[in-house]
Each structure stands twice: as C-alpha cells, then as structure tokens.
View 1 (tube, one colour):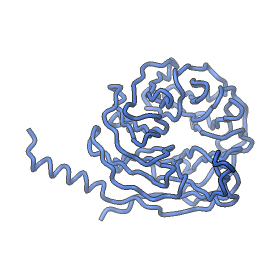
View 2 (cartoon, rainbow, N blue to C red; view 1 turned 135 degrees about the vertical axis):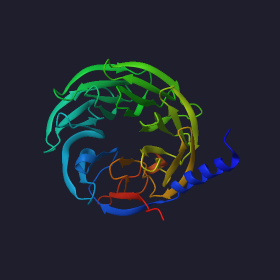
View 3 (tube, rainbow, N blue to C red; view 1 turned 90 degrees about the vertical axis):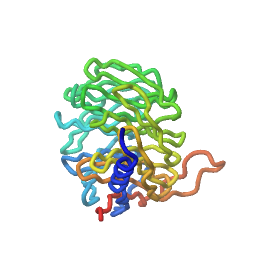
Length: 336
C-alpha cells in the first residue's frame, strides 16, 4: 500500500512538471480574405497548412512567412499529408470532394469524389490510406493516396467531426450527433467498435496519446472526455472553455489542449493516464477555436482575426475584416 507521504511527493512532483506556463511568444499577420478552419502541422518540413475558405495557406512554422497556397479549393476544411506519395489532400465541403495536390509545388492534381459535408481528413500511415470524415453524409470516404482514387464510402452510423490515427492500424473519430467515439480498422476499412462519450455531449475535436492509448475529445458541452481506446471506454472528463473546435496533446510536457471560441486555451495536465487537472487557462482572442500542435517543436498554433458587425437579426457569423488574419505561436516557458 502506498504511504500518504509517498503519494504527496509523487503528486508534488507531477504538479511541478506542469508548473511552467504556456504563453503567446509570437504573432504573425498573414492577412488575406475569408474565414478559416483546420490548422495542420507538417513537422518534417516545418510548415503549417491552414484552410482559408477557397484555398489552403502554406506557412513557415518558424517564421510565419507565407510559402504558397493551394488555390481553387471549394469550401476548404481539412488537410491530410501523405508524405509517402508526395501528395496532399484538401476537403472541399462545397463540392462533396477532395482536392489532391503536390506537396512540393502546391499545384492541384485532381478531384476525388467524396460525400456531403466533407470536413476533416486524416492520413493513416499503416494502411497508406486517407480517410475523410463527411459530417452530413455520416460516412468516411477511403482514398488511395497514390492513385488519388476513392476505395469506398464507409458508413459510420453518426455525424463525424475530427479524428486521429493511432498508427497501429486503427483510426478514431468523434460522432457529434450520437456522442460516441467510433473505431475504424484502416486495413479492412470497417467499423470495429464504438463507445459513448457520456457525460460529454457533442464531441468535436480530437487528439491522441499513443504511448498511453488515450484519446482526448473536446466536447461542446464544456468538457474534454478522455478515453482508454484499448478498453473502449471513457476514464474521466475535465472542464474546458465554451465553443471548443481544436485539440492537441504534447507528449513532452504531458499536456492536452482545447482551443475554445470563448477566448481561452484550456491546458490540461496528465498526472497519470487516468487522472488529469486543469493546469492553466491561456487568454486568447475571441473565436480562436482552431489549433494545431507540432509534436516536434512542441508549439501550439492558433489563428484569429478581427470581425465586423454581426448580420441583422443576430443570425450567422460576423464577417472577417480583410487583412486582419493572424497566426499565434504558444510555447511553454522554460522551467525554473
């Protein structure tokens, strides 16, 4: 039996490890018109792929310099990077399709049919396949990334939001309308399991800790639900801000993140694989709800902009003011 004194020392050590605060270290003005969606890091090449309504901006992750753009995207949402084939893939929500492009030149290479509300998109290295998450269609389009051709549309039994590859032949996705996590076998392209995220409702964003087999589902009900994906069950929930749309997990610090529309970035520290606490709430601009985490440099990337007046009657989103779109870099302060 563990003594109270030993338990206290272990807890104190864990808290000390998470004591170094995260803070905004750089802000880069990228400009350009239009709304935005997912931010996808490309660690080997120090790049970020940022969806901007009708294009994908490719940004140097170290300097904030615009390296180029993937043009002609019809309703840009997600980006997947298949390094093995030299191809990138951008979902086109307005066209029910995916645009394949060259990772070096950013030139479009072809259109791949998908399904209604093609949104997030994930590359799985084990099967060497790309999986779209088609929200309104309640399915996933499985794509051969070399040939740029669809393999099948896989029924998921609910509306998928974001997902993550475990790197072991399994891919996981949140089903926001049924409040579930679904497990996909990437080799056979079949649904293997599903489990409830209760008490979390409307899971949207997802991050993964492959070392401890944990999933982090950011939920619109104001919590992050942590799953043991080997057991297929929720182990705990932790409070986060409102309007979450992004998540990340940094193995080096043991911190998970939820980026929220209410102007907060919730930092959650992993004390053990089954126990967590809110370590910090970083103040961010309102509506900065999309994020990307680079596991190589341990930086969190957020985007924001200034907005005009809301539409008459209060319905719909206020317009993004031209030239105000910015990229923020959030890093952990050196431990003292």
